[in-house]
Figure 1: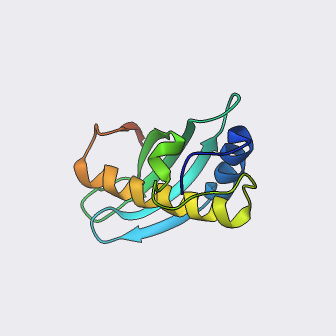
Figure 2: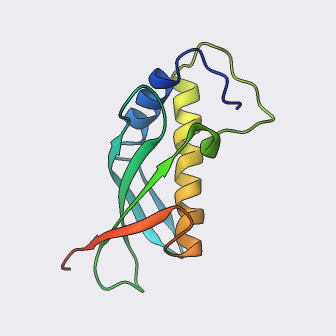
Figure 3: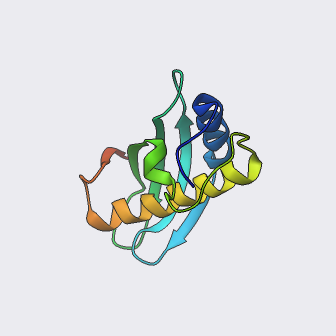
Length: 119
């Protein structure tokens, strides 16, 4: 999916709406739950706050990162000007995959820890 859209702000809002509340399980990072997504301003980036809980972490951890449109699109797959629900679903799935990649590399790489909540 390329980053050519007639309304990047609409695409950001739709993707944020789809991401909000989603979760994914990963052997390395445990359960990753999106708790907040903000699509401020006229376009991208979107800010994602999420929690992780895994056996290696005794407490739930809260992380945050941002995504530009280029972070969650595929240059080999063109997008029409009409950004729809299927497109938002695809970008949100790409964002979740990117979250797992960020967690695998540790703090840095676009991700930072916000807080560690009591168990």
